[in-house]
Length: 288
Image (tube, rainbow, N blue to C red; front, top):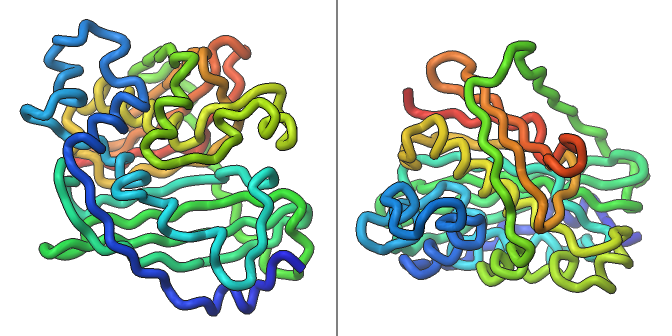
């Protein structure tokens, strides 16, 4: 059987060293569309794209120093997974303090949970990064593997968030470049699903789709720009469920509702496909 739950959950944590600098940060920001919607010299965009006073969008931690690829979800004992059957199910990041533009950290990763959804399996990888000053961030990554359920494990909880019935407090529509996936993958996510038309067809899509984590970054940048005054250091936690696919060349509609003093509820949909869902159950917790 491709998945051996007992062996996978008992596997020891993997510890790797991460390092990044301003070039990695800027490449990531360009990969999620920074600098594309306003004049290049606009100060509101230069804070994402120019090393002087460069800030770091918290979702950068998913690629920092090789990021989640180094968590090794597909190299654990007890897991033999076909990449064509894999989709990113959800993502949560918790920031213990602002991410520096240049840094080094130790990443400790393990399989935190393994759920049996019947026709699919869901892996939850937990990665915790720390540097010389202590804990830096924690990532929980949910990986949906089609056709690998039925092993008799727990089903796990399904968390759904009801959006307010009123109009959103802010809306951003972000056109995404046709080559966005090709640019984003330079930050380290080389899954051919996002570049190779033949591979995409094997996975059941008529053309390559955008990385879920790219949509994740595009959405967070829209939230920070629209509601948090462009200050990325205010973000404390960001979680989402990847509810549908998104194609390069489409427009991402990001709706934002305030929920109390420190929480934002967010949805992201495709404008061209009648608001087909892309991100759902999305919450940004922030410094008031």
